[in-house]
Length: 293
Image (cartoon, rainbow, N blue to C red; front, side, top):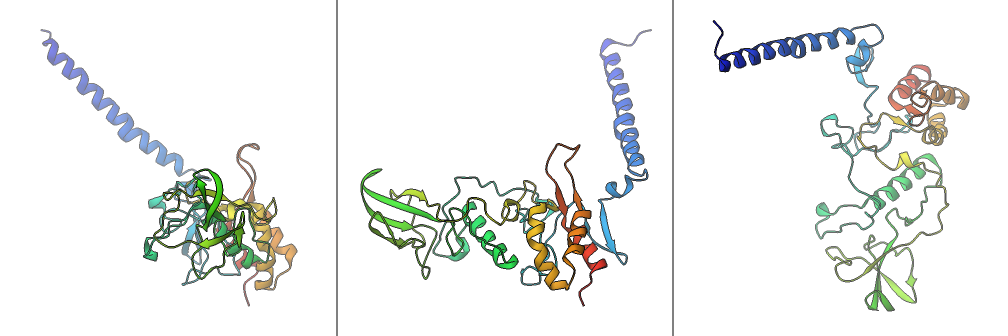
């Protein structure tokens, strides 16, 4: 006797559920676990953790900062690229800043805690800091000498045309000095916290300045990766840090450059991406080969 059609449909659905539960809920996960235990893959499956004297110091896949308790760079170590993931390199908050090329005006609130920096000002501040730390030219186009975006709000008599009536350096506040003293014959003012100069009719005008076309500080030194977790820096950023690390460790520059080369990976499959230097692995190698006296 054949079961009713509705019962046959339910039985078929139950059989399919059991089969796919076994295949996808048991067999497939166990297969992936087994593959992850194969020699050569077991370290990656476990998170590519790096240990020193039995103590886990980080992962080769996730970046980290090399700073002191006050957040200042430790000079004897190579520094990582900036991170926008949480408070920095937080794998539970992997993300970019979502700021783009048009983010050039800072939000200057009366309460400093409510102020936010534009992407341009973040880049300018980082470039200036890297330049000071590594003894290179930290200047960058569209940046002021004090490390914020060189941006003016220009007010004209007839909106977008007419004579200039007022000019404000929108990212600089007292006691700074305006990065240009006059614009079209009008004295440049400093911004006042709480003022929205764009809403007041000011035309946002970035000023390139006299910085070199190709900055000495590479782009990855001043911008975060899309994930905020990138453990690599460019060979160019590593190179400008060599002199500092050599000085702090009293080392031979050739030895430090050899370690950099040993921890530099090439392009994926020979053509995708760009070469990168794994900062954590490099710093661990430095501590093994060139410990600080």
